[in-house]
Image (cartoon, rainbow, N blue to C red):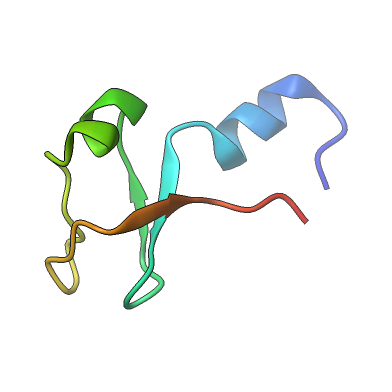
Length: 53
């Protein structure tokens, strides 16, 4: 994986994954927590952070 902070920021900062269809969405954390962001593909509001392997 990434060895320097700039690459980690590109891959993981503000990236969320839909729990229903596994689509990636890039959005601010506060909007996701407030429930204002929905998945583009299926319309679900249930998102999780992208996992670091």
